[in-house]
Each structure stands twice: as structure tokens, then as C-alpha cells.
Length: 79
Image (tube, rainbow, N blue to C red; front, side, top):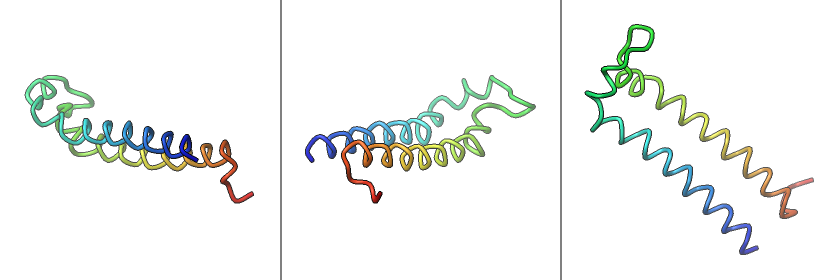
């Protein structure tokens, strides 16, 4: 059971690190990011308006998928 929780905590730490990077790192680098234009929008704007939200949704689905696999690996699934 300790290995299960260790894997779970490691997964949460990695996902929180990605969340933090997507949420807070674009702000200090906004000027540099805005020099890159994608489909007519500066990259800094795009990350703030849509990119971060897409990453959050992907993180949620990845966490659910990975936890289901972990549960199966450790025999904790409902089946």
C-alpha cells in the first residue's frame, strides 16, 4: 500500500508542477511570448485565454486515466 500512495503522490506532484508552470510562468515572460504570433494572436494572450484551460482539462483526464491504471496495478479497482 505504501508503493501505491508513493506513486499517487508522485503523480500529483508532477501534475501540480505542470499546473503551476502553465498558470504562473507565462506572466513574467509575457513580453517574450507575445513576440510569437499564432493565428493572429500573441502567444501570451493565447496561453492566458485558451491554452491554460486546455492544459487543465488534459491534466484532469490524464489524472483519472492514470489513477485507474494504478488502481488496477495494485488490485484496488472495483472489478
